[in-house]
Image (cartoon, rainbow, N blue to C red; front, side, top):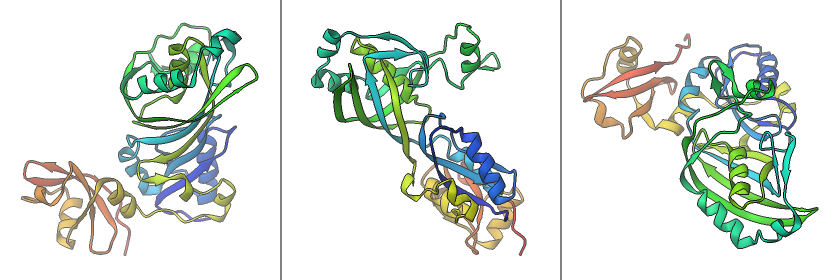
Length: 299
């Protein structure tokens, strides 16, 4: 086994938790210092971004990236969890479903596109008074979660199937971090007056990282290649090349006076002459200062 620092892309299968994936990766890479940039529900599959060793420091800059999902929404039934793992609490009759035309579905998805206010699913990991909402809900307590602003850049209906007394809608969704796709399914069904829940969810993108580049769980035993911290940080934040003297100053907490004009955003990845990631810099007036430094690798 080896211990390395970098970012690993994993294709999570259904039926296990994101923590299970982290545990498998810890065993494969021989370290406990592994974190993730956003979980997936056990039912969901797709892209997980994991940080290994020192690269866990980068996860702060990855958790807020926008995401893409492929999903199937079942119209005609609402569940306790807003997905197929919950108990059905209401169903619609054939006449009600017959009124849900393709045009109405397109209109409903359009209403849920753009900047919207969304109440997260009751069975979510959001903490209420120090406890997870899903723990409170499972214990029979009423859970009232506050609405949050999210952005749905794309809610594209790709197919509509009418079978077995339900209407299944396949869709591709581009959204901001913090969006609950289960809540979108619930709200689409509620807006159409027939109820709705999620039956399939697969995450295909997180920011500039794509599912086709991810490794399966079986491949973890072979210790697959990981992305270098410098490559990841530069891809997400933009690159700032620094000299050996500047790299030393940043690591010692010194500012780079007059250097703010060398980056275009609020932050950038400082890359040393050896190609390694020194850290993440941020603007301080006309200067740049280190917001996070990576551990130095011994020469």
